[in-house]
Amino acid sequence: MKRNQNGIFSTRNLILMAALIAMQIILARFLSIQVSDILRISFESVPVILAGMWLGPLSGAIVALVADILGTIIHGYGVWFPPIALGPILVGVISGLSTKYVFRSDLSSTRESWKVVATVLVAGIVNSFLIGTVTTTMYSIIVMGNTNAFSVLLWSNFLGRLASKPVTILVNAVLVAVVNRAVYRPVIRPIVHRA
Image (cartoon, rainbow, N blue to C red; front, top):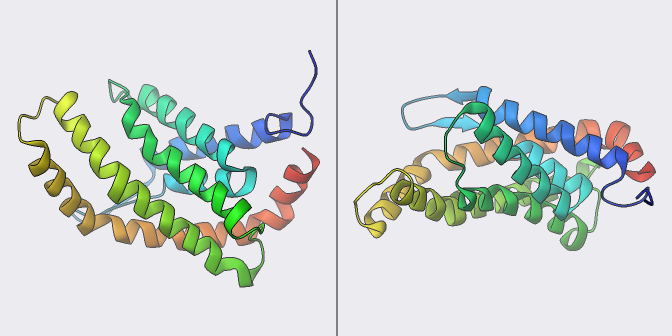
């Protein structure tokens, strides 16, 4: 069997993906800030966004999917509901596509920080308000047995997210920009370019 030394599944890329999966699980399950009853700031998207930006859209999607499955198993949420994984998968894909095809940059310089922030904002909005609202409403009906009308639950879910998700998305945008700026050039670029 031939080794894939230059592709997405090189040993270096797989190790980096595994580290980002572990970070995502830790951030999602154990490190969030509960500011109030309705405001919870979570950092779970950060490793997925970084995977997409650093390794490409497919890697971002893989990191999101594997972290979602393992996180559900480890934390004991019970039933893994595949549609909910679509949001995080799209976060990884959007991050990778925007870096590779829209901005065409490694986004490692300070003047590129606005591109990183824009990428995180778009990915966060798609995940939280488009995909997340629909899939968590489906989860509430299909898995949890909620008998309210889909449209009622959807609007309730959307309004709840509107009260909490913008803060999380903004905090994640700043965090990703800072981490990318600090880590990409000295640590990640040598790994990715040697892979």
